[in-house]
Image (cartoon, rainbow, N blue to C red; front, side):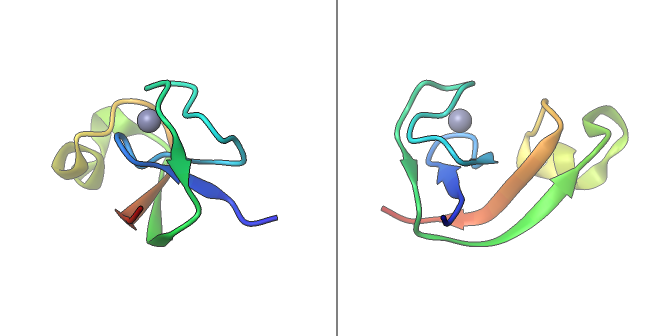
Length: 61
Ligand SMILES: [Zn+2]
């Protein structure tokens, strides 16, 4: 099963609803980054990520 990405925060999960934003997720996404330490990550700062996890770079749908 393909993982899905949240349309709001872009976090990648196997769920239909994002556990953080409570909005629908989309299976149509491209690329991702892993954020292990959001407080010390430049990527996390740039993408406004506050929770560690896997995030899609682009989410459609
Ligand atoms: Zn979300």
